[in-house]
Length: 242
Image (cartoon, rainbow, N blue to C red; front, side):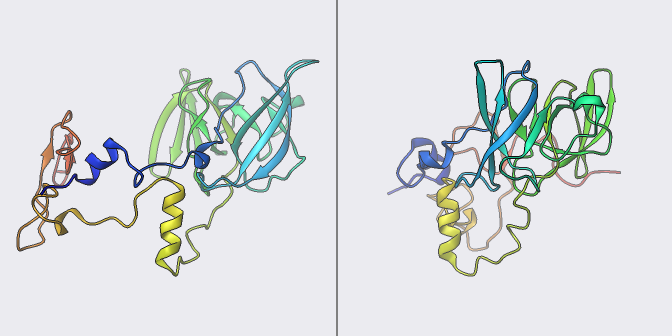
């Protein structure tokens, strides 16, 4: 009797692939684009669904109203620290943890938790130890350098100054398989993963065969979960011709 392959089982939903809601109860966001001024780090805490500590920040909107939001904690920040949303007075250099628009950040500055669209909240570079570098501003676009890759974003997108805390989390060895199990369980991931070529032909398109050779397969872009394996409609395959 056939069984569902991993993609199908994940799509159907079951206890095996169910994400624990408490792992993602903390939503990372920014306040409204109109909000600027001095904020205060109320609390630093850990979340099982994130690889870095999170910082809860409170900022005063007007005389009666305050707003709270959560961002990944920058390296070196502490509870009770004041951070700025926007340019610091007298054009002082921003400090680690400050939140600015990309157009207001000088070239060569390290940033993280970057918005892909202004006002949408941080979407890029949120994992522990990650950061990007401002490479330049031109025609309403800001170019940022992520390792060897360059991308251009709207200059009004916001980002946090500094590097995400929690770097070095992968240096310490796991030692036991059980530790990896619980780490992946907190993120709603199935572990351990069985290689596709090791299973029977009935269980996966890559399964079966005496030799453990991966069948080069290009799946259609709109293929169903059971067939959406291998190369997902790549633009090109093979080595690049220089």
